[in-house]
Each structure stands twice: as structure tokens, then as C-alpha cells.
Length: 423
Ligand code: PMP
Image (cartoon, rainbow, N blue to C red; front, side, top):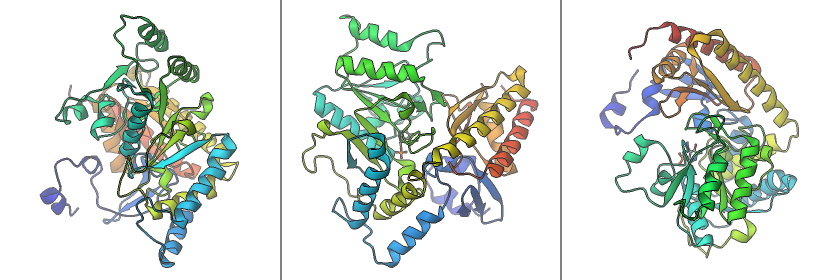
């Protein structure tokens, strides 16, 4: 593998390429290829950015046609025909059928940009400063979003105090018998509870980087209810769990809640084209013109690719049923892995097509991921100790490819557990 220039010239900050050493060249659907001819089934999908697989033909064709026609590429936040089509399609296919009346703010093109904008707007709208985040939450690497991110390794890199956030216990954080909403409620109600009334609570309905921790439906409803009662805005960070990952377009649909602000990124750009947005409850759209700015808010290729996958998949009422079928297949396979090794006390968590196999120890999950890569499957890890093997297959992965990948992973789990690991 010719990786000399990467090692010589690319910053030590590089991460994923260390876990998956190869020089990738082409990809189609859930298949990923390297220049040395190796091939993988991709169950990582660009950390959830490739929910329709690599190079979905509908997006590729739309983008090629757009480029050939001389379509404008970069446009700040100018009106463009491509952006109009994206917005109108998003309205028609996503918002209207769900009876949602959000305004759409395009931010800089990464998830953390959407989170920053949502926090800023929540602070502006309420006149309060504190954002309440949850244990094990992940919201991005820029300072505002990082302040709401639990991970100590990343927080340490900030170089400045990370301020104006508090951390609340996520669902199940204090053990299955302990109701964390009641804890938060008690603290807010107590004049000496020490919790300043936050501007907003930010939540991932399924914590992705934090270890695939799934918030219960009733818990989410009670969180919304608590927020409404105290005049706290509710932000759902759907950067990773949105766009169909959990089975419906928005991860919060299942709980039938309506957050005040929603952050979307990753898969909204169709085929991994950078695009991020914040959905804003109409009355909260208190921005003055250009008060929040960004050069790359008009990625027209992302509008084109994003529109193509919305039309191709989300205009099709059968699409969620296909996700549900694959989810059942994935969960059954993970439970079988768990049940095959009772002594290891593996745990399975997930919703829709975001799932985790908690190996309890980082070394085991690392071995699984490493063996899987050697045998032709890409699976990444997550969780506080990187102890969870994470599964994010394409929402339309052919079931036989999913079966093959999971069969290979099952072998890796068996071998990882059989290998003595240095403690
Ligand atoms: N929020 C969530 C829930 C995420 O999973 C991520 C990325 N893993 C982000 C925000 C930040 O997105 P980005 O890396 O594109 O800035």
C-alpha cells in the first residue's frame, strides 16, 4: 500500500485511516474498493453520511446532468434554481406529509455548523446562555458544539474552557431502574438544585458516537413535556440518526414529538455531498439577515444530489418498510452473535439501521473491527471506551450483502472472543 505521502505529510490528527488502512478508489452501493484490488462490504457508510450507499445512481446522474448543463456550483446563499428545487422537494416530500411547519436555515456544510447555529438561535431566542446536553452526547468538534459533547479525549483538545453547558443524565445512564427525567425535573424544581434554567436541551434520540444508546419513546415524550413546562427549547440533533436511519425520516417521529429546532446533516446531501441545515419552528426564526453566515451554504451539487434521493426514496411510501425489514435482519443477526457467547455478556442496542454490539471492552471491539476489515467488512467502533461495534448499513443495502457482511462479522466476534487479549 502506497501511503508514504500520507504518513509524511498529513497531520497526525488523521483518524479513520488508521483503523482502515487502504487507499480507496471506487465504490458502488455498499461495496468499497481499494487500488490493490481489495473489496469491502461497507457497514460504516461514512459515519452515516452514505445512507443510500456510495454513488447512488439517481444522485450521480442528477449531478452529472447538472454539471453538464453548466449549473452554478457555488452560490453563497443566493437563490439558485437547484436550491429552489431542493427546498420545494423537502417541503413536499418531508415536511408537508408530516404536518411540520419548519423554516429551513442552511448553515456551513458540516454537522457541527448546524449545531452551532441551533445553539446560537436558542440563546438569542430565550436570552439565556446555558445549553443542557446529555451524558455520552456527541455534537461536533467546533467549540460550541464540543462544549455539549461528553467525550473527554475530544474535550481535552479544546485548549480553552468549554463553557455554558451542563450535562444531564441520558435515558438509562443511572441504571435501568432510575428515571433520569425525574432527576432533571427535581433539580429544576428545587430552588437550590443548582441548575440554571437552560436556553435549550439538545438530545440525540439514539446516541451514535456515544455508544448507540437508545432513548425510550416515553422518555423522549416526557423530555419534551418537561421542556415545554419550563420554557426550555428542545433541539434534536438528527445529524446522524436522521434521514431515515432509525426507520422514519426523522428519528423523533416514533415518539410523536415536535422539537423546536432540528439539526440535519450527513445523509441530507444525498451521496455524501456536504450539506447541513437547521429546521426552525416558524416563530423562532428570529435571525436578522446574515447574522449567522458562511461561505459554503450554497453547495448546489448537494442540493441536486439531496433532491434526487428524496424523490427516489422518500416519495416512495414503501421505503420505510424496506428499512424495517433490514433492521429486523440486522438485529436478529446481532442477537444471534450475543447469544452464541453468553459468557462474554455482549449487549445489543439499536433502532432501525443504527445498531451496536457492546463488547464491554475496547480491545474486543477493536479486534472485531480489525478482523472484519481484514476479511472484507468495514465496521467502526463507538462508545466511551470504543467498546461498541457500530453498524450503519446503507438503508437500501441488498439483504444478501447485509447477510454476508453479518456472517463475516459473526466469525470475527467468535475469533475476537477466543483470542486472549492483553489487559
Ligand atoms: N451531531 C451528531 C449527532 C454527530 O454524529 C456528528 C458527527 N459524528 C455531528 C453532530 C458533527 O458533524 P460533523 O462531523 O459533520 O461536524
